[in-house]
Length: 182
Image (cartoon, rainbow, N blue to C red; front, top):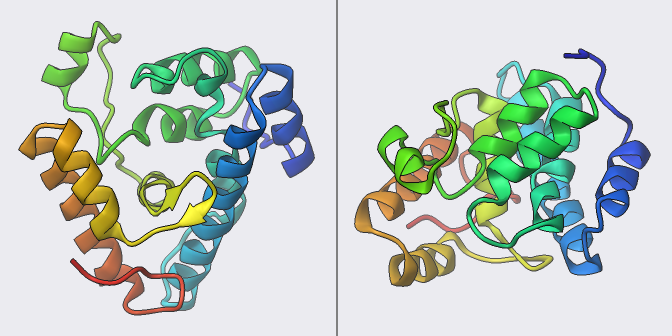
């Protein structure tokens, strides 16, 4: 894989080339904006984060929505991103951003390739978390996302989102970009 990140303009072009609708483009831009804000807060608190990776990963996190709006958009997106020879870190952000992550057992049930689908790096966690705080292109409280997830997903999946929220609040505190606490 290449280690060179695409520019913001190149990432947006990839989304358009793959047929992502305008609402998905706006969502990806909103997630990127929030994710970078969270990343900057982490950096101010002395954490080592790659803001460029966060921005590009967030812009491309939903590239798979050009083909499907199901949970499978994560693996479809990683497959699309691979055709662009993107760095492995970007592919990992794309495939690990769904919910609070997908366990190995859940991935097997979904028929996904054997892999890790739980956010591991700080950049992966930041993008996944920012995605939970954007509905369409608007910022929403984490409680709203958790309430919506609770209606659609098993309690274990909602619990992973809650743990991600708690971890991020521990890292970023009550900064302007942080949502209200659960």
